[in-house]
Image (cartoon, rainbow, N blue to C red):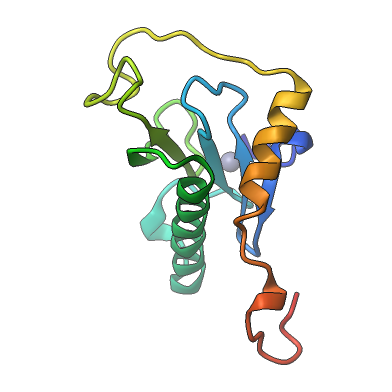
Length: 145
Ligand SMILES: [Zn+2]
């Protein structure tokens, strides 16, 4: 996982000081994305306060952006780390039309859905139009990194 953070560069749509967000290659739930911590840590409570706050803020920002882009009926936020013990959020837009509506996405078998490159880029463009740019905010002087 540590090595994979910047892989699948074509799927990355957001980066902050602490984390990187990218589309899950499996788009069975439209907009399904990961937000991954940039360095190795396994537990939220082990992060320094300011890093944890930033990580949580990023998670909320990405969830908000996904909800604007895809208008889901519900957003799922999951931080599990059982098979991959490196802090990463699963942000899963849920739709009443999905066959697992009302249940966790892990309950039972489900079909994966891969897109072609153009499909991923279309999703990214939809997402990126909703990402607030630093230019729209008042940034502290000298910290506009
Ligand atoms: Zn790691």
